[in-house]
Every structure is written in C-alpha cells, then in structure tokens.
Image 1: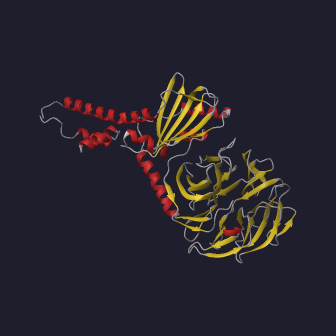
Image 2: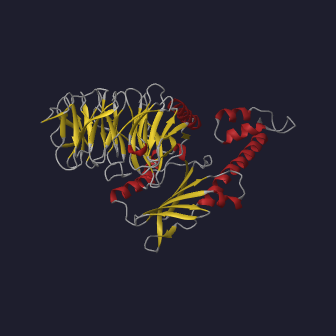
Amino acid sequence: AKYWYRKAANAGHDESKARLAVMKPIFPDAAESAAKTLAEYETQAAAWHKKSTTTYQEWVARYGHKSFQAVSFDGKTTDLKVLITFVEDEYDGVPEEDIQSRQTRYETQLFADGTSRSSRYTSRGTSGGGNGSPLPADALAHIDQLIARLPDDHGILPPVNRRLMIETANKPERHVHVYDLADAPPEVDELMRLLNAGSTYVPRFQSFSSIHVRGYEYDGALAVTPQNEILYMGRESRLQWWDPATHEFMAEADITAVKDIVLAPDKVHALVQTSSDIVLVDLVERKPVRIFKDRFRAQFTQDGKHALLYAQNGPVQILDTQSWQPVDHADDIPADCTSFISAPSIHRALVRASDGSISLWDTAGHRPVKSLSSKSDVTMFAAFSPDESMVAVCARPWIPYGDDATAVVIYNSDTGANVWGLALSHESTRALLWTPDGAYLLAAGESASGTSTVSVFNAATGKRRGELTGPSRINGMSLLAKSGELVAGDQSGKIWFWDLSAVMDRVREFEASLTTAEK
C-alpha cells in the first residue's frame, strides 16, 4: 500500500499524500522523531520523482535533435524554428536495439526562412518533402504567437503512441515540450494545423460488414432513399438499388458515369448527376424519367417547389418540380448565385456568388446575413445540424487548408459566427454528415494515396475524437433510418457498414477517460 500511495503522491494526488503521511512510521523504534521520519519520506519521494522524470528525459534525449539545424531546400545547413516529432508503433520495454526497426517517426520542420518540410522515417528509408515556398507572413506571425503561448508539459510523459514533441527556438533560448496527442492544448492543435503536421490520436473503428458490388470505377455515388434503400453506382456503370438489411440486389437503371445523387424533398424523385447531364429518377418506380443536358450539379429549394441545375458556363436553370419545366426565376434565389444550399426548415441558406464568395442568406428577408468566406470551389457543399443551429461548410473540397479558412468550418446558422475550424486528417473532403443528436460531425475524406477515413468531430469542442476506416476513396455517406447504421460507398466497388451507435459509445468513453485523467 505504501508503494502505491507513494507513486500516487509523487504524481500529485492529495489524498494519497494524506494517507501516506498517517501510515505507520518506517522506523521500528516508535521513539524515533517525526522529523527523521518526514526526512526519510522526502528522500524517497525525491528518488521516485527522479525516476519518473528520467523516463521523460530519456525519451526526449532519444528523439530530440542535438543540433537545432537541418539541410534546407537549397542544400544549405539552416537554423530550425520549430520541429514537431511523433513516433508511431512505440512500445515501452523494448530493447534499444529493436526500437529503430519497429517504429515509424514523423517529423515536421519549420526553417528560419519560413519554409517547411514533413518527413517519414522507417527502417526501410525516408519519404516526404515540401515545396520550398515560405508560408504566408500572417501564418508565420501566428506561429510565433503560438510558440510564445505553448503551455508547460510539467515533465509528464504521455502514454506510448500518443507522444508529440515540439522543439522551438527563439535565440538564445531553446524549449522542448511533450504533449498528449489525444488531448493536446488548443495552441498545439492550431500549430499542427498551420504546419499540416498530422493529426491527433483517436480510437479507430473498422467496418463490421460490406457488400462487394463491382471493381474499381472512377467517381460513383451513394445515397439512402426515403424508402430506406441504398442507391449506389454499381457494376457495369449502372445505378443500382440494394436492400441494406439483407444486402441483396433489388434493381438497376441504365445510368452511366454517376457523380452525385440529390434526393428531392417530395421523397419520390432524385436528381442524378452524370459526367455531362442531370437525370431525373423516379425512386418508387426505380427508373429514369427525364434528362437535362449539359448540367453538372443540382439542388432543391427549401419548399421543394424548385430545382436548380447549374452549368459550367451560363446561368442557373430553374425548374418547377410539379411539371419539371423551366421557369424564369424563383423569388428566394439570388440572381447571380452559383450554388444555393437551403436549411431544411429555418429561413437560412448558403449562397455562393460567381466570384467564389460564400454568404449566409436570409431566405425570408431575401438578403445576406454575413459573408463567410471570400474563396470557394464551385463544388463546395454543406450540411445543417439536425436542430439547424449550426452548419458545416466545406468551401474547398480539394484543398486541406485555404488562404482564408480551413477546409471545413462550423458556423452558427443564425448569425454566421465562426464556431470551429476543423483540423482534418485527410487532403480532400468528400462528404459531411451530422450524428442524429447533433453532438458530432462526421467528415469523410481521403489522403493523397487514396486511403479514406471518416473523422468524428465533437461539435462542442471542435476536436477530432474518432476515425472510421476501411473504404478506399469514399464517394458517398449516409445513415440508415431503420438500423441506425452508417453506410458509405467507395470507388473500389464496395458498400461499407458501421454500427454508429456502438462507435459513438466508444467515442464518448474515450472522451470521458481524458476528462478523468485531467481531473
């Protein structure tokens, strides 16, 4: 008991200090003075503290740089400003000679000239690099501010595979901090985002089942119909219907090169984007009804009375959804918009103008509420939370971090206030989906190698708290109303399933463990 109380007391646990203090004196002779007993306890405590900090110091000495310099892009030895190190596949108790052969080490270097480089080191060699261009001046100024505010790590070594070392230099001083990747301070998250230095540690969840539909095909799409059927770009470039409960094929339609599926508010129709046209599909009859030529994206107004079809060059085409015939205009749609994403019920929409700017729009007052971003791609998309109090916007799906915003930002849908900019773990974003309770946002994306993940973000903190793995290049993601399962399609011809309720239970347990450790 004394052994464990002493360890806990050295870690700062007050109750253990008190219990240790009132235990039987360590000297057999009761006449020994209390002062001598106290002195012995202090000596033991100092020894234990030295032992614990030695482990911390050993880890820092193993992975820290002896000289805070490196060879830059021009081949010259240059001073470093920031060095971020993360070690994967780390094991306590492994002999020193086995460490290098079993681990992967990631480094991100920021040079004094403002250029940065990311590298990956394994026993097989080194990979990575950078473009040799300095970061923008405002980003470098922000990094300087973050470096000055980095909190103390208190000499505590986090668990293995969660250790992130940040070495900084402001001559003549040099500082080393080691943080827990699972619960890093906000300053660390922001620094890693600016340097594109990787992501936080989170639990990972494999899909529990899948349907193998076909071989690889570029693009593709997936959606879950109001009839709770999976609509998926299937084998031989045909749009297919699948039963999510039995995983059985149901029907197919002759529609090729599908890129996107937009369900109509009437719950009967869908607009399917192909490589060159928009196809109107009857979901009940499971067949195409009409083709709109030379259109590449489709959206519906909030009341479902109009459909908007966009062209690469030229004005938006507005359709009356009763007759599916073109009309001249719709009162609630700005004349020059190139994208109009309305909330399900409140008087809010996102409007992308022809210059690429995005505004939050008041559909009742026919006016902008707030400008959200000055730059966006024409393929931008968004998702309103279930209670419509927040909206997640992906302004630039193919760029991880834009000039004026992160790839995905959560806004207050009433005022347009910025709630969180999310630090993604992938290089392009494919889909956004809120959990039914609105507490978490799911963001599907892929790395440069084509590996796809679905990141789970806590909407209250903006932190990434989980990762769903399995697919290769996700092309659609949705929830099954009956089972509560998350379903996603990929370009390798598979439909993947996760038990979302079980995943979220594990995510909450993980978050609770961090809170307990903090307390």
